[in-house]
Length: 130
Ligand SMILES: Cc1cc2nc3c(=O)[nH]c(=O)nc-3n(C[C@H](O)[C@H](O)[C@H](O)COP(=O)(O)O)c2cc1C
Image (cartoon, rainbow, N blue to C red; front, side, top):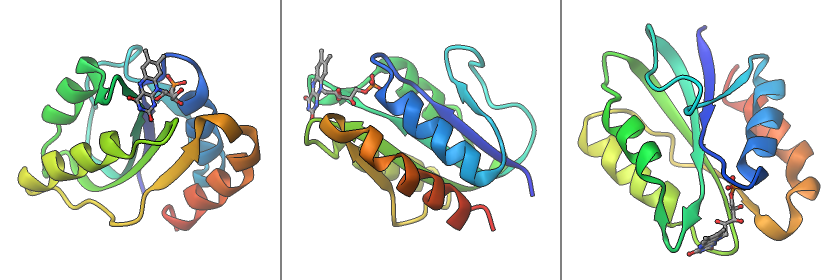
């Protein structure tokens, strides 16, 4: 299976969670700032980002908009924030509207306890990569 973890992280919280998910999924986490478009077909794409003033970063929105159901078989979302789940909810809606399969469950970590969620993120990565 071709499994990828992609994220956008400004403060480093989502990056830590992305790296833990990648560890569990036996792959590597890559920032969308380093790789602007998903290359080749992906079976499972873990995709994460955070809200800033209640909206996701424009680059993450563009990245998600460029995804197609031919490129990705399944998307698994994750997010970190102070409290808002808006980024994952918007991503879920946007991707589903494009006909892309999105797993209902997503991984959430509060920005106030990122380190405490690292092990759970690793398990989450393992769970959806089997
Ligand atoms: C400018 C700014 C605006 C933010 N706005 C929100 C917000 O509207 N709702 C929320 O729950 N968290 C908000 N946060 C908290 C971030 O979403 C949170 O720290 C998140 O973990 C950052 O992810 P990152 O470290 O991957 O960039 C904001 C943080 C910053 C710096």
